[in-house]
Amino acid sequence: MSKIVDPLRRSLLGAAMISAAASTLAPAAHAGPTPGGNLPPLKRVRTADLEIAYVEWGPPRGPPVILLHGWPYDIHAFAEVGPLLAAKGHRVIAPYLRGFGETRFLSPDAVRNGQPSAVALDTVAMMDALGVKSAILGGFDWGARSADIIAALQPERCRGLVAVSGYLIGGQAAGARPLPPEAELQWWYQFYFATERGRDGYDANRRAFARLIWRLASPRWTFDDATFDRSAAAFDNPDHVAVVIHNYRWRLGLAQGESRYDAFEQRLASGPTIGVPTITLEGDANGAPHPDPSAYAAKFTGPYAHRLIDGGVGHNLPQEAPEAFALAILDVVRG
Image (cartoon, rainbow, N blue to C red; front, side):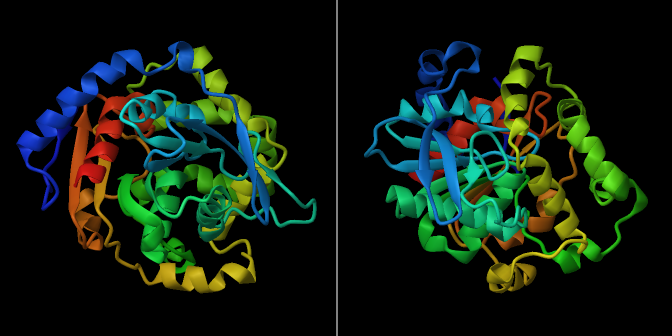
């Protein structure tokens, strides 16, 4: 089991509480997960823009938890986390993001928009359609960014937040600022995607590209072919390439967003603080671009803790360290 190192804890829980929570979680780790990373049957719900495919664990009337994956990953990242939380009585919902898995746009004419506010507000629309007024939100990569955005813009919908790599809210102006060369090198794929050759290359090599990102982002995670293949099927979505390319081009100011999201993006560009109870997580072997925790700690103005998860944990923290991720969700609830 991964070890939790919590250097920035403030006003959430004492060390004794965390130890007690870990001991109560441990039995569920053996009873909950389904062997082989299998998921419950897919469910579907319609919003104004999408038919969102999702899986659900736990009692329908349990306190809701919504888990959001990133790129290039999918809902299998939560195959162990979901049962752990369900065993504690939570209703756990993990949707495929737009452009992934079985989630589909309702209109063939809809913009295959990947800008951050659009992706985030899909979750709010899903909550409305499911009658979920508020939930604990947890995510990594794109999913952490979406959870951050909801917590900042609509805190009444977020009872608590667990975000891998912390505060990931930004805007096009921030994306236009150059970084030091070593940092720019980590974003090589963003520049590749800015070209038509990059778009065509990603389309032709989705699985090889994703496998490379998995290896670079989690250099000490020894996933097998079956684990990768279960997630890679999500990249066969007919809108996947369009959404991914738009996301990264939008960040660089190379693609337009939709005007209906302008007000949201303006608010996000100001770097709003987040006041809901929050735990941020980082793996000690995260090979993907990520900010230092000290750079964003002040952005969380409510009860807050940061945890470093050691043991060679990389970017896909929920799948690599499911107990640590589930414990953070439970601690936010208790806090």
